[in-house]
Length: 107
Image (cartoon, rainbow, N blue to C red; front, top):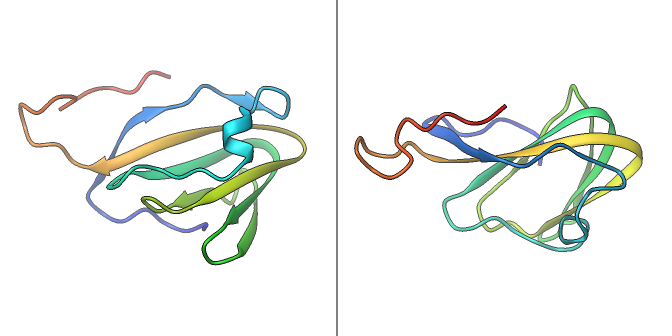
């Protein structure tokens, strides 16, 4: 649900920007992140309904209210009218020399 990512995580990947038409069907139905992977849902414009399916909590995400997805948490999202968003994935900071260490995210 909305909130803050734990300290010590680093962003390592992000999706393209989606709108209400291009949002993949897989995100509109139940899905989850992998073990150890957190997601931060950034709404750029509009509103997005975020449902955490294991707790039945719902939250409307907006540009001022991002959504935090815990590792392996079943959830789905639904646009509430026109919307633009992207998802940023975070994990524990890799050790120096590990794959993706120091990787810069594309804009």
